[in-house]
Length: 390
Image (cartoon, rainbow, N blue to C red):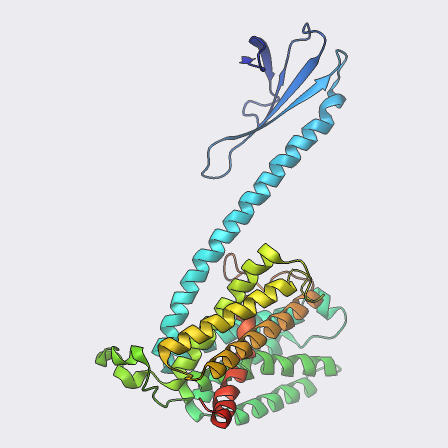
């Protein structure tokens, strides 16, 4: 096979093209040796990423007349390394597209569930809690954590996951979760003590923390959305809300507070990600090396701005100071919730808690910012606002 190559102002030279296989991925083009005084070897790498045209990566390598195969191994490795870097960049771009697409889908679905409220919201929370609890107990049983402690038995992990999923439903039905939490802790302790072998305290502590972390804390979102049923009469959206969908009375304090909280958490994550990539220089903590102080400040600013803007639109809370404090509270809960889950994953020796959501990891990776925030927001609305005014 022959080819020609034009080098600067030089005339056309005949080139020989050789390949070791019928469908080569790497081709070598050698200039004829009679060219004095420099001999060049031209390496051409052909790659075709999925759904994209062929990409060419080339390198000119000076060589002597007595050049052997070993002389061009280093440049060829450089070419292959360049191809690997290009492939990594394409993978990162593909991951970013997946994150954006699935993130928008999750956001729209979550918005509809929050507006619907009632059993729709509670069942959605219960399903998410069940998946998150399964991932949590999977992390507890992973090699990284299990090497330093005794994890709970597999059957008990499954029972705890079911109990966590039932807690939001019981909260909606009874209006509180004290009885369900204490009863669940007693059942778990009794099952561990009656099991065969020697029960360990590490088993009890990890199981009870799972009930608290995945089940108990999630119940506050049900209490926030469905328990605060006082109408937000000043909300402008409620004035145009269709009667068939509940009319103005559908827009309660719980609905408005939940929408502002979730929106400000999304803004905090987004602004922290963008600010960290653009300006991030100072590490925030050793628990999560990718988080930076600059990114955290950007997330805090975005969280406050969104909380204040939505408070003006939804007319709750009416005070600028209260809206700003609500934004700060949401950011604090989301940040430390993220760090707690990062600490668990670090000890487990994994990057993601699971692979349920393409481009995002597991369900716990997406809900870690909301774990503690529901309890903080509910306490803010029930305790802080009545003391200092709306």
